[in-house]
Length: 505
Image 1 (cartoon, rainbow, N blue to C red):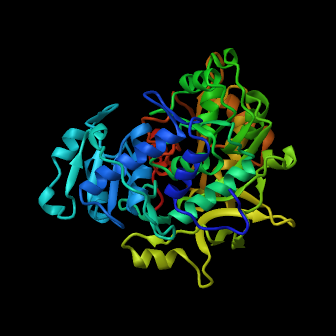
Image 2 (cartoon, helix red, strand yellow; image 1 turned 60 degrees about the vertical axis):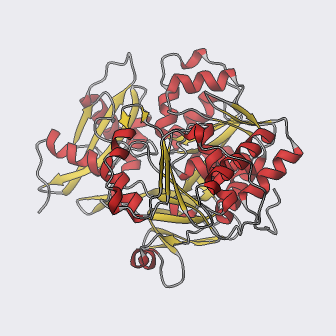
């Protein structure tokens, strides 16, 4: 797609164009289906026809509580053809979270499945107080039946909201980020350009579609570039490796958790990968490993957040390798960055339209000059490139020194026995706070907590050395966000118990 000057376009318009230009080329591959661009366009029209028959129209909110698959992408595009708004529901949500989002977003139709993994959605949806949800007209638990006569194409204003993305934080009341079709597609087109994505590429992404890394950075990157998107309902390291090898995938993406799980799988070396590039949100040590061990010579570093549709900076695939591994990246054209007291602030075409039905929170998210307050820490170099440091809310102070967990996690990831490391700040009577680390070890490595603390002591300043360190099997019991990130607040609460500490105050 042409980037400059940018011409706003609706998703359906581009999907129709892909179907006309490359009808027989594969567009989407999942466990249950292979769809070429013509079939994907036709299925989207049939989904739109079914939604229209239910009385759904422009601006109506349609919730999708589905795993990654053909139904998700078809309904996503189908809703967009009507000018309706997709509201992704996290498939890990429980009753109270589902009830909150249904009420807060005034959902008109909820399309889900009866059961997914251990989640009994039929039971959850059956317990809903429908009398307290007057806007909710339809609860449909068989997405295969949401098909109708194809809807004739209609003009859609791309500046209208296309998605409401609930933030994956740990607050009791998450906020619904409103993103326009135009902002998401323009973001995806710029990302595709920086990745060097081409129509012949095969892009594997297990990022859940209920996250903007699944919608903008997976579904719409494939739409913008014309490449094939491959996915799975859940991420499993060996299944991902097997799919990428069998399907000769050339691009992939994810955060450090996903890449570490694949690279540290005992059968990793058995899979012959054809990867050329993609993006990762990871520290330098993990970036180096991804590049060297997975053969991703065009690997790019990515930083963003839901409120920015979501990508803010991305390396170009032909930037110097050392810069890409170090995480130095420029913003996309038309996006401005500013550092205020260490905080990254962003202004530009990619920003959200606001938080749904939360005007006070929307106002508080922006400064007086229209820059989004990200709550993240970073620094700009002389060339205007951003170096992401960490989430401001995760930073803790040790004897007056600011410590970002990522700094210590980076050191731990250099140890050959470490599969995954997570660090939080915990109370200390003398220093205020100190570091506590949880580490998942690689199979076959005999390592102790003392060994890893000694490793840190040799590699970083004393105030960054973990006071406490525990080896664990994994983080699922502690809590993961929908984007496969460890929830630091839950980890910190667990640390207080594990190490016999009391919270300050």
